[in-house]
Image 1 (cartoon, rainbow, N blue to C red):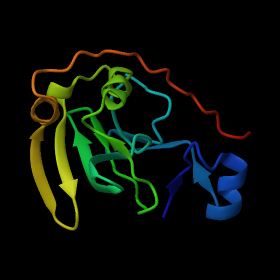
Image 2 (cartoon, helix red, strand yellow):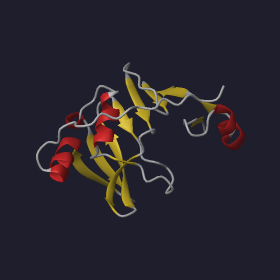
Image 3 (cartoon, one colour):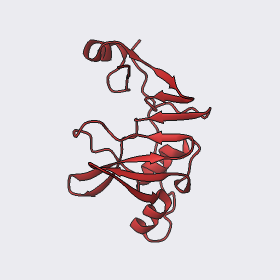
Image 4 (cartoon, rainbow, N blue to C red):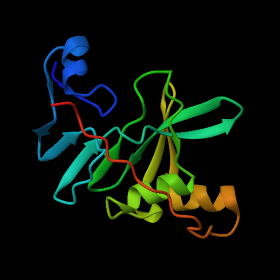
Length: 146
């Protein structure tokens, strides 16, 4: 098994806990990377956003986001609630990958897969009319330890 280090562990701490890790790998023309630094070249599978749908309280359902050139996987641990895919924060993060909600399919993962349709439809159902982008959120770029 080969692991991609996230921005939370950093390279030195990640190695101490996980063993050898990689910044990125390429498999079948897909770039596997953490995703805290967008790349617009080719196709990528990332985790950084840890997408979910928040149900209220502390409850959320992990989801995958998928387009023809980006797949975002949910957190692999129950300890991360994840970023609500209907939020403006999520939309802003996807803009960094040059993607819009109409480009992304949402699939819930718990314990079977459930196709929830296009992200744009979920956002419209949640907010009513299409929400304005409103306030802009600053992105944090965390650098791995060297």
